Length: 266
Image (tube, rainbow, N blue to C red; front, side, top):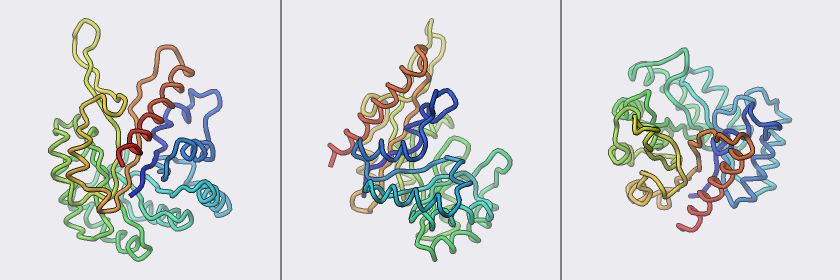
C-alpha cells in the first residue's frame, strides 16, 4: 500500500484560470516534495498525445523522484481501453482507473460486461488492473453487477464514496457494498453547508477530517494495507472569490494537509 496524489488535487492549478498552468513534471515534483509515494495521472487528456519519448521521460522523472505512477480515464470502449493499456505499459503503470460513462456512451450493465470481457484479459496478461470508480451517474449495484459479471481479479472498484451522495446513496452503504472489490481509494472529504439565507445547501469538498467522510470506518472495511490498495488524495475545492492566487494557495494547503494526515495514520 502507498499514499499518493491525483491530478484532481491540482484541479485549479492546471486549469485555464491559472496564469501558468502546472505541467505533469511540476505535479510530479510537487507530489514528491509533499511526501507522496504515488502519482495518479487521472483524466489528464494531454497524456494521450504523448509519444514514446515523452512517455519515457515521464516514467524516468517519476522513477528519479521515487514515485510510482497510476493512470485514470473514462469509458469502457475497447479501442479506448487499448490506448490506455499501451500508455500503462509505456509508463510502467499497474493500475488504471476508469468510469463506465462518457459524454457520448452510457452502456447498460450488460453492454459494459460484454465490452470489458474483451479488454480485461489483455490487462490481466499485462499485469495491469482496471478499476471502475463509484460515482453518481451509475448506481453502485449496477457497477458491482458489471464487476461480478466480468469476474476477473484484474477488474475491481475505485472507491470514492463522496461521489455517490448525489445519487442519494449513503457513503457508508457504498463503502460496505464495494469493500471486497476495491482496488484503489480516492480520499477526499466532503460536507454540506447552508447557502445564504438558509435556502438550500452547497455540497462541496473540505479538508480531510473536517467533513462527512468516515475515513476510519472506510479503512476498516477495505483493509488497504493488508490488501496492497493505494490511497490517492483528491479534492472538491470550490473556486475562491478572492481569485486564482487564493484558490491555488488553499488547494496546496488542502493537498499538504491530506497527505500529511494519511502519512501520520500509518
